[in-house]
Image (cartoon, rainbow, N blue to C red; front, side):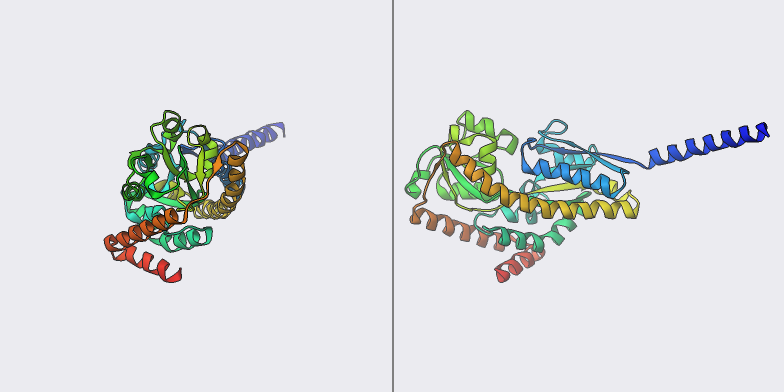
Length: 329
């Protein structure tokens, strides 16, 4: 009897070990790289996304968030995801425009200047963006906008002529064209380098959100802020397509559902952040300027011109997106 009990216990232990091993091997561990600081609402949303994925998959898919460029520098995230060096990453959406201009529609000045307009533009652009992403070996998980872009300046802007010859930060082709149209000197500065570029006075004019202004203490060198609502550029969270496709269907669906929830939550966070950071600028002594109507009219005219150029350059697929958006607007 003792012999059979001993054999039964031994068999049970072996089976338990096999099951434990199988369970461990079924677990998926992903690294997600972001160049944005821990304080960013985008990174806070990433952390909620990772928790949600773990919950929806019963701990079988675990995502480790690496913020602040600690794992991969911001400009290298896209390629690192495509190459499989990291499973997923967060990128500045317009930085993907070299793949296809659909990724930079949100950075065309004055094309979409409100949250509802930006959401409509993304809804129309998303199918084409996903198609172009798949062709490069990655998938779009979700995309969340920064608050509307305002204008930080080292000096008060009273006329359009005040913008001429100022060193203006650019980080996308459309923003470069905006700088040129204003008579400013475009200076390429990626997001992780923006704070140092401002502090060293490399740039004296920056279109960005109040959120980023607070993150970088922009008021220290660029004390004037004008709420131009120029555009709402989006960050995109992307994933290596092979890594996503390798998941069992139920786990893949769980990740996609978590991404959908993160997108909805992120848009809400962005709107709240827009309100909070504008107050933060005021509390820290930033000068909230009132834009002269002639300056605003000139900016709107430039925006219309840039939108027209985008239409002329658009391939049939992109033209369909833009035409649908203009019609809806």
